[in-house]
Image 1 (spheres, rainbow, N blue to C red):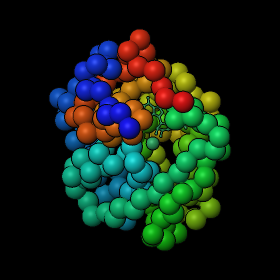
Image 2 (cartoon, rainbow, N blue to C red):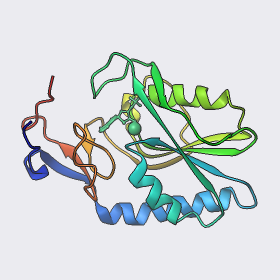
Image 3 (spheres, rainbow, N blue to C red):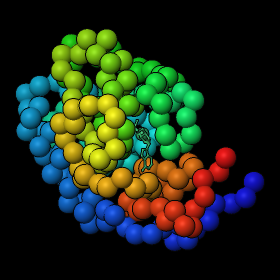
Amino acid sequence: MSLPRPYEELLSEVLVTEEQLKKRIPELGAQISRDYAGEDLVLICILRGGVMFLTDLMRHITIPHSVDFMAVSSYGAGARETTGQVRITLDLTMNISGRNVLLVEDIVDSGNTIASVLAFLESRQPKTLKVCSLLDKAESRQSEVPIHYTGFVIPNKFVFGYGLDLDEYYRNLPFIGVVDPKKYTPPN
Ligand code: IMP
Ligand code: MG
């Protein structure tokens, strides 16, 4: 197995800097803390891309809340496409019935993943169900999905870093970068 290349060789530009993340995420945390004040709250994070955002966001949510995780995979699609159908590969541990649920995602692209996950969560009868996504590729939407809290609206380019992967690497980068299509060929 060949080792991944240093990220500098694949990066065309930094789209969201570490400074921008450090400014925006506390704002989102403050807004969520205000909106859910006096209410019960459970954050649900979709593995694995949302993890870095979740752990930073929850440090800025000042009201008591719980956290749970789920994982999904898309049917019959490559790493950079979705077909609209997702399979739940890891279910929640908690019972969310009657609770205020906030789904925490790294990125909404076509919207297909979130649309399926929302339908799945809705069937568990939460009291409320909302979406917080760090990134919104608004131009590429196929399924109309509500995003109640958005970090940054970004253009339709493949991004990596800050939880988002490029073939399962580079999630550790503290910023969000754009992949240079001239320097990177997806594996088959
Ligand atoms: P969807 O097209 O909204 O269903 O997006 C599904 C998933 O694709 C997201 O949750 C991400 O895990 C992944 N994804 C979409 N766009 C990107 C990207 O630019 N970089 C990394 N992952 C992405
Ligand atoms: Mg994801």
